[in-house]
Structure formats: structure tokens, C-alpha cells
Image (cartoon, rainbow, N blue to C red; front, side, top):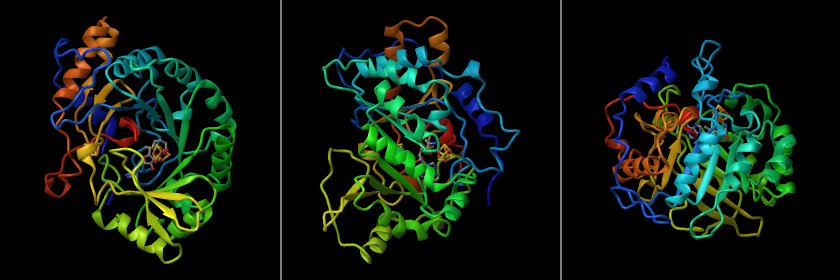
Length: 370
Ligand code: SAM
Ligand code: SF4
Ligand code: SF4
């Protein structure tokens, strides 16, 4: 049963409730890395550039809640490109090596290419290149892929939950043909935004029949399909454990049709477990966020649309950066705030999920940035 909540109001309350940290605190050495309470390094920053979306995926922005009366963040409340870039620079100076733009649907943010240019110009203190990526539902990708690449984007991840139009519609509650998303994926690959990763959230009884057809479609394409366990993010999707299809089951189902073998991770802390087709048709991945939590290696911070910083996807509270940004905080003060937030981080929601028996309000994924 879907619970009627008002996530934006919830967010505002959470923002107000967040204890403002003093604008001082540990300043990391330039080029130094920040460690949290569990010795996890701050390595990735996800930035939600808009809380709006042209889809209404049932597991993310169900229509019953995100309807015509829903109050999205007004333009004056969302961070400007200059504000985002200033904060991103301070994160990069403190060890962030990867930035992902997300939302909501990031390609709905007007002139996102300009923001990408600004972020692509940031330099890591160690001289390495910044990995600048974006997650999109693919609906606007075909005509934007080249301009995104020209602006300096490294790669894209595209979400696609079915290869069958009817099932796709049931998942995203929008009238949008699968073929257009596939063309967007191919165009992204063609302009050099690949290898494109394709994310499929698997929800039992809705699109789990698409696991094998999706694998069949992407096998041999050079595009990497990843199956994601349906998560209990936010408070509006009516999540139940019964709706989760564990990755082990996905692999078992695929194993009935294709010969697969596990691959080593590309790097420590990679969230996807990689598999390859033994006949050389490429690789796929599973992301077992529910059944095999990876909190121990979670190195991500999330900057929400209106400038609150969250250190967990399942957070109830964030730390406001917009007010300091707009009231003259210096770079040193903002850097100190980042260090203080990360330093006191203790999040392990998924690892403790079984023990989290008390219901609590969580920020919606479209707002916090998926
Ligand atoms: N609109 C873009 C998109 O769909 O790719 C970017 C934002 S979306 C919130 C980011 C990712 O989160 C998508 O791949 C989406 O499928 C995933 N996601 C959203 N809600 C989820 C849930 N409840 N469980 C698992 N993944 C979810
Ligand atoms: Fe929109 Fe992405 Fe959420 Fe679907 S998953 S509703 S496309 S933000
Ligand atoms: Fe990271 Fe929170 Fe997810 Fe654990 S539950 S992996 S801490 S975002």
C-alpha cells in the first residue's frame, strides 16, 4: 500500500531540524583525504541538479504522490551552477575523484551542458583526471549525447527497466517508447560516452520477466547491463521485502540460458558484482544493495537539489550548505564544514536494515539524488 506523504515538506522539516554545524572545524590538508568514523574515505560526490522528472517510476516517484499538486523546489531555492561548482571544487580539493550528476532527471535542468563544462574544468590536487558522469532515464539522450560529450562528460549510465513497451510503461507510468531510449544509448556509445552502463531495477511481479530478454538484448552490444535490487529508499514507494528479487536469483535465472562466470572487481569498493558471458559476449553486473549491503566500502556523499549534504541514501537529515554559501562563508569555512560532516559520519543503513525495525521518514531518492 502506498503511503501518502509530502516528501518536500518532510525534506524542509529535516533541513530545519538539522543541527547547523559551526563554520569551523577540521580542515583537511590540500590534497588530503577525509575519513569517516568507519575509516571510509570521501571519494564520490553525487549531485542532484533537479528534483523534477518526466517519468513517474512506481518505485521512485509514484504518481499518487508526485501529482500536479506536488511542490517541487522553486528555482530560487535550488543551487545555481556557480554554487554547485564552488562546492564541487572544495570536495575535489578534499579527495573526491568522481562526480555523478543525477536527480530527478538531470537532462531536464536547463543548460546542464554549461554546468558540465564548469565541472570538467576542475583539477584534482594530485593531477589525476576527474571522472564526471551522469545518470539519466535516456528520454532526452539521443539529441543531447553529442553536446554532453563536447561539454566534457566522461560517461553516462542509462536507466531502463524493460525491453517490452508495455512493461516499461507499467514501471515508469509515462508514455515513452523503449526504442527511443535504446537510440539514446546507442548515440551515447557512438559519441564516446561509453561503455554505457544500463541500470535495470528489478521488482518482483512487475518487470522480473524482463531479466532474460534484457540480457539477451544487451549481450554482445558493448553496453553493460546491471540488475539492481529494488530498495526501500524514501517513504513513498510502499516497499516490501517480498518485491525484491535478490541478485542471486537473477544470476540463477540467467544461468538457465547463458553460461556465466564471475569477474574480479575493477577497483576496491565497486558496488556491482561483475559477471561475464563465457562465450565472449561481454559482461553484466548485479547490485545487491539489499541482500548484500556494501556499507563497509561506501564512499559517497550526496548534494541534494537545494544544497543539503547527505552522507547516506537512506538519510533523514542533511546539513545545509546553501545558507552558508549565500551568506558569505569563505572557502576555508565551507571546506571545514565538509570535513566536519564527513568526519562524524556513521551511516550503515543497509548493513543494519534487518535491525531497523522502527519506521522513520527518509528523504525521497529523486530529491537526494539516486
Ligand atoms: N532520472 C535518472 C534515472 O532514472 O536514471 C536519474 C535519477 S534516478 C533516482 C537514479 C537511479 O536510481 C535510477 O537508475 C533508478 O532506477 C534508481 N532507483 C530509483 N528508485 C529506486 C529504488 N527504490 N530502488 C532501486 N533503485 C532505484
Ligand atoms: Fe525519474 Fe529516474 Fe526516478 Fe524514474 S528513477 S522517476 S526516471 S528520477
Ligand atoms: Fe552507503 Fe547508506 Fe547505502 Fe550503506 S545504506 S551503502 S552507507 S548509502
